[in-house]
Image 1 (spheres, rainbow, N blue to C red):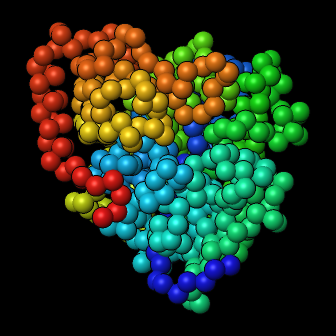
Image 2 (image 1 turned 90 degrees about the horizontal axis):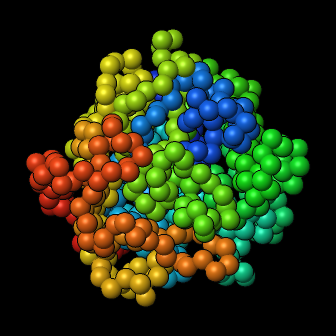
Image 3 (image 1 turned 30 degrees about the vertical axis):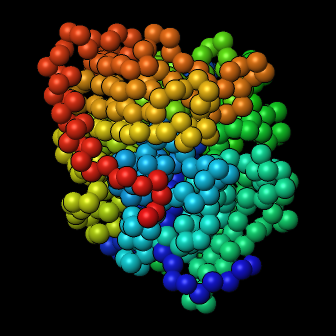
Amino acid sequence: MKNSTNPVCTLMLILVIVVVSYGEKPHIVVILLDDLGWGDISISNPLLPKAKFAETPSLEKLSSEGITLDNLYSNSMCTPTRASLLTGKYPYRINRAISYSVLAERLWPEDGLGLEHHLISESLQHRGYSGHAIGKWHLGFDPPLTPVDRGFNSFYGLYTGMFDYYTHKLLNEPFTNDIHHDVRNTSGVFYGDISNETRGIHATDLFTQRAIDVIEENDNTAPLFLYLAYNAPHSLLQPHPAVLANRNNHIADTEARKYAAMITQVDDGISRVVDALNRTHMLDNTYIIFLSDNGATWTPEDCWDFVGGRNKPYRGGKTTNFEGGIKSVSFIWSPLLPAELQGVRSSALLHVVDVHSLLEYLTLGFKEKVNKDVDGSNHLIQLIEGKSTNGRETILHALITDVPVTRQLYYCTSKNISLPFNYSVLRHGSFKLFMGAGLRYMCTSDTLRDGCPPLQSHPDIPDSSVLLFNIADDPYETTNIASQHAREVREMTAIIEGYKKNTVDYWYSP
């Protein structure tokens, strides 16, 4: 291991948050899933037969005893969502690289979540929490942008966006390992490559076991912040053979069953994590917040990504700001919730930045703190307090400004794009506005079947467009009503112009 004596602050993000009270400070575990689609599991589709979905008994039990959040929105890709969760800020206020895409470690290694942005993990560290990040980071590839530099005591996982689940090597760099166990303690910071001892073990199982080890080592002796960011069901499609052979036999399609096995394996892991919390007498004072970082990977039906995720009945998927790309499968579970909230489904309009505000609230002795430097609201706090709330009036889904062709190479094929991306997506009340250049191009992210073009487009959307949908009346975004609602378009355009005043103009930390 390399040793560094520089002071560090660590932070991390996951698709589920578990909070366990320790005195006035609850333990917190966040569990985040990667590319889980709205149509992938039953908890987001309660009116449909469970036979259509992956087996997820643990998630079903937790969500049925907690508050299911039917209108919590993520960003359209993993890096922006993780950055918003940890900072409480919309991506356009973080840096221009994060505002429009994932971080590209091979093309722009200097990109990352800059040190000028304070993370929730750093706040919790100052409040006496022992913070541990597990799984996918994707917010910086080298010190001082790794988790143990951002408020976490330890990190166990991958810095980048994806790797082989068994070899833990980057796909385009087969000789580069990306499985790390980093530790910060009173002696300094230690960065460890654990590829030799972990090779051949499925990453989902590694991350589950590390979470259990952290819980058992803590043993209810200190307030715990556990950020568990599984990289499943993101490609590659590599389920554990035993899970594939013995589970989800109700799904006939072979590729769909493989994808379901990836999800079921995570569900089994979450069950083991909950059992560990119970054994250590932490579960009775625990909140669990479960999230997905974006929708499932999407391509047109004649060119499906081999991963096989579903966002139906919604339009679009990962990388798009249609509902299928940004509706996050999410819930909160805790025995501390008021009895009347256990088993409730909430339609309150929420965004992932509001989860950041909830974490502040839970770790400040259940006291609201309005931080003027963040975009999070108190609506999620009001919800768990049993107060009536319809949630936000406004969500800024995207604000993409002047992304040049050279910066589109990683996620798009610039051969087909002659102009910089420059567009915005805003939800205000029940209306949702898309406007600007580049809307036509919906970039795909993972390996496509042979013969599929790397850039898909919607032929019904001009390159420079104004689209307006009424989500209350048209949740599947089928009818553009912009021409009938000129006043709403003007009002929402003015709101976007107000946001633009806070846009940062640098690609990474200055």
